Structures are given as structure tokens and as C-alpha cells.
Length: 245
Length: 305
Image 1 (tube, each protein chain N blue to C red):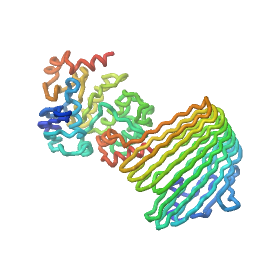
Image 2 (cartoon, chains in turn orange, green):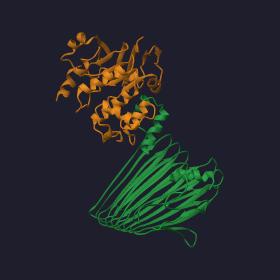
Image 3 (cartoon, chains in turn orange, yellow):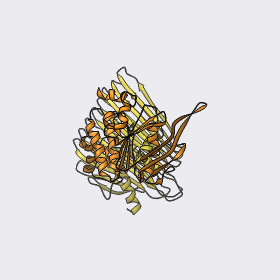
Image 4 (tube, rainbow over the protein chains, first blue to last red):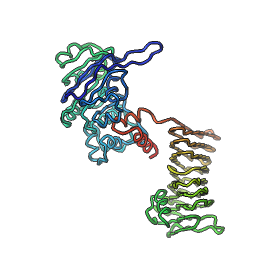
């Protein structure tokens, strides 16, 4: 059984006199044990689709099935509890909530400092330096991003969605990020990872690539099939250039 | 002491029994227990209006607890406590008031604390307020604090009122001599129809004196808060005051930070921010499996920690 099925998902926003369609009749099925990357030009609707899966944005029409169950009307909390993890593109900052607090919330029980350190070391942070830091602007963008990823790893969900995990990961190597995804996939049985990315190295490890442009799926298939069509397009170029600097 | 009083003591002073070191426990208008040490003396004022706490010079690493608990409905009292903190001492003072009012009459405790902080002395002062009880009678606390700091003294004040006090007007005045430093951290949460006002006037009179007055507060339901923090720089000095608040439901907050510079080398800063909980914070915690209500509690607990 597929882990996730999106059936005829559409989303639009009102803009002055006319409605702007962000997503148009999206149909997508995610199978277990797959690493799927959604790519495509900026503004094409990728992040909106990720938020629709997490329940943060409600589609105007269409159905979402998770593990065969219709979750279209389920709240963010219910979806999280059913087994959907979501890593924000822009990590949220707090006042007074520490890294260890966030990890404890993610795991759903009181975990030891040692256990929390385990998750931080997976994202390349020296745990003792971070565990008692507040999740606020005193942390750099890259540090916040890695903590964000750690909170999703800690949940061990069946479906983990990462919205541009590479953005802002400055001093940390991609090999480690890729290792994180591989570990995650092997640690939860029949799980599926969905990543939104422009990064060639992430596209390269995908089992399946989905291209979304202008609100529609314009390509879908294995990397051998899809990657050649992306070279030199906006789907891959922008961020690659930035990351190489 | 009865169970209610013991529970109040635990809330305001984290005390499970009698504390270590010097203490004076006041329950329902009477002294319930007292202990003095070689360095810290506690003496009742002759007119019965309160106590004098005298800490000898050079007293290090000692503490004084002076909690007050009220469990009788309709009790109203004004108490004057004077602290004389000797030169070069380094002490912790824990005060606080817990009121349990199950009756229909208002209960009120107005504690006036005066601190005379000697040269080069270091004081940490912790004050917690707590109210409980299902009665219609109000629980009222009006603390007045006066701080006189001699040269190079340091005082840190932690004021906490999280639950159950219906009405508070807090007045704090401080006078700082050369090199004195005052650090105030106030944490306040109001609910229901509660009303809380907090007024600070910090006079930096001495050269290189400094003050940092910071309040974090949450106003829920239909409660109202006023934070009026004034720093007055009368000498070369530095001062900072900040109010950071969350409003929820129909809560209201008025923040009035004010600065008065009467010397060309007085450097003063104020900051104030009021707003509801950021929606993205709630959403992030919901994606980790919390309900909206649980997420709000976590955010507020962190904010007031």
C-alpha cells in the first residue's frame, strides 16, 4: 500500500480580482522505502504542496490519503501523531525554549541528555555546546536548520518531509546530510522520505524525481530519466551555484 | 502550620519544611517560626509593624528566607521589613507571599521591603507571589520595595508572579551610588480579570552605576497589566529596560518605558514589545505532535522560564 496518495489536489489564493492557482490537479503517490525529491523552479508550488501534506495549508479541492486513510480533514497535530514529520524551510525561533526541550517534544517523552545528544550529533552539532541553548536568533541560520532537521529525525515518522533542507547548511558537508537521510530511511521500516530540493547532489540519490512547475507535475521518474532534462534549468541551477561558492 | 500553609510555602519558596539558615515565617499575621545565625539576625520591630534583618559585614554564602502565608479570608496587613546588608557580604534573600482565600472577603498583604546594601555587597533577592482558593474574596498583594545601594554593591532581583493573585500594584524605587549595579528580572502572568501594575524608578546617582530592568509577561483572558519602568541617569551611568509581553484572549497590556538623562554621560536604552504568540511557533510544535493548547503552554512556559 502506498504511504501517501495525493488525489486531484488544487490550491489557489485570491489576488485582487482574480484567483491565482498555485497547484493544479496534482496526483502523486509515494511508495514505501522510497527517497523522493520534488524539484522545479521557485514559485512553482513545491513548498505549498509540502505544507498541504503536513496540514499547514488546506487544499481547495482533492483528497490526501496516508497509509490508506483519508486525512484531508485531519489537523496538523493528528497528522503528526499518525506519522508525518515536517522540516520547515525557515526554522522557527522561540524565546526560552531550549534545544533539549524541542527534542523532548519531538520524541514525545522525557529523554535523557545523552539521548538528545545522539540526535544532535547526527546533524553534525557538538551536543554539549547546543543542548541548553535557546532556539533563538543567537543561533546561526545553519545551526537552526540542523536543529530543525534533528527534531524531525527524532520523531522517527513513517513519512518525513524536508522543505529545502540544504538551504543555509553552510559549513556542513552534503555527505552528512545525505547520510542523515539514509539513516532515517533504514531506521523506520517501510518509511518514505520526501525532500524538496534544487541540489544536484540530493537529486542524485533520489529513487524518484518529481518536477513541479507552474503548479503542475511536469515530469516524474527515475533520476536517469529526469536529471538530463533538468540540467541548466531553473530547477537545478540557482541553488547549485550558490552552494558551490 | 496547616496543610494549606505548607502548600503555599512550597509554591513561593520551594520549601518542603523549615529552610536552612536564617528564616522568619509569617502565617496569618503572626510569626510562625524564626531562626537566626551567627551572622544574620532577625529582630521584630518594637511597634510590631515588621522585622529588621541585619546581615553582618563579610557574611558569605548565607541565605535568609522570609516567606509570608495567608490562609484566613478577610485578613489585611501591612508589614515593613528592613534589610541591612553589611559591606562585602554575599547573600541570598528569598521572600514571597502566598494567599489562599476560600472565603468571600478580600485578603490583602502589603509588604514594604527596604534594602540597605552596603559597600561592595552582593545580594540575590527572589520574590514569588502566589494565590489560590476558590472563594469570591480577592487575593491582593501590593509590594513596595526600596533599594539603597552603596558604592560597588550589586543586587539581582527576581520577581515572579505566575498564578492566582487578583490585584497587584508593585512599586520599586532604587538609588544607586558609584559603581552600584541593579539587575531586575520580572516574570508575570495574569488571568481572569486580574490586574497587575509594576512601577520602577531607578535613580543612577553615582558614577559608573548601572541598571538592567527586564520584564517578561503574559496577559490572558481579560486581565490587564501595566509596566511602567523609569530609569533616571544623574551621573555617568548605563541603563537598560525592556518589556517583552505576550497577550492572549482579551488580555491588555500597557508598557511605559521611560528614560530621563540628566547627565551628558548617561547612556540609557529602552525596548518594549507586545504581541500574540507567533502563529509559526504554534504550528511548529503542532507538527511535532502537540495540540494547539499544549503548544501554547510550552511556548508560555519557555517564555516565562
